[in-house]
Image 1 (cartoon, helix red, strand yellow):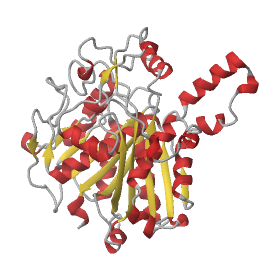
Image 2 (image 1 turned 135 degrees about the horizontal axis):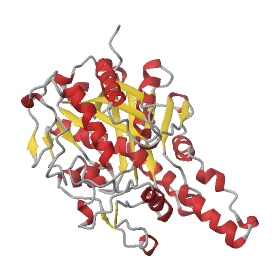
Image 3 (image 1 turned 60 degrees about the vertical axis):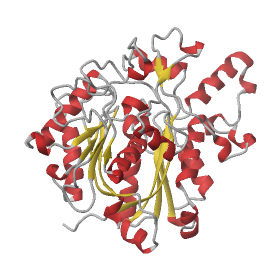
Image 4 (image 1 turned 90 degrees about the horizontal axis):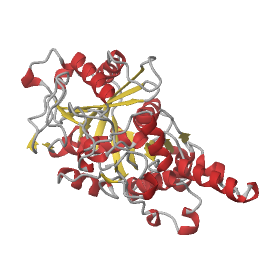
Length: 421
């Protein structure tokens, strides 16, 4: 079998609880800041959940107010990230039919749906906005990005809950390998940090109700974890085939060398406890990249901070890494401790952080995990420290995992910028 075509990351964009750009997000992450804070609005007072991870939404960077009002916050966040990721370089080198957009959201424009339901109940059907359907449909963020960029080559909006952003990136890799388009804008956005969103996730006992400082509420892989913290935001990667990106002298932030996916077929929201399908997803991604577990420098874990989900992921990682001696275990990275859970935006934002770890050769201290669960085979950094020399090739290598409600598992193999030199 011929080696899989490597895919270059030539643009990045983000708006997150840690910052309103990718640069601010990364800098605040390495500075040890948290984007999680107390939910102070009265709408949350009776819900029993104290912590959330909001972000700014500076849509004025992209659209004037009269146009922004016709977009749900979810679409606005996606457009902000897309505007950062899509640079003058991309505009000069690609025309409409060469550009694809694959962009995910787990739920879509729920804030607009709630608003228009209130209008219907309080003011009657004649006052419901004619823009309602375009505001709430799950493919609205993808479509708005396509419109904004003039991307007519491909348009797709995968919906797979917490793994949606990773699925969008994996799908983009596949499209580029097939030659369907020349460049893909891929990622995800989510904006459900509202009374309804918190109430719905709290009802299924997924959210942390920790009574301590809010910035300590998200505790992935820790023995005292009690659920995740809801966040919001967007993350985007611009992807091209590596060889052509080199020829165009693009700025290469990193390279995706392998993708894998599977389905638990076990439960609609609970991860399969034995982790067997999550393990299969990881093994497929490594095989696609032509690598083995011993070649990994870093695991970017999904690690939501739920009791069952973290245990299932740790079990899967033990299946992948358990044969390696302690000194050969890759480091683990669990960004939701400071980002909260951004649902479909989680994967692209967290991949951005993992990419920066690879490129800097530097680990940030893991927050909120003083007592890692014994099931987890790989260590979490207790303090900032350098990565050792790359275990294979010229660049450090990470395996990035995303596991979504519905049982969707997606794994990606990521290498730093030097792999694209």
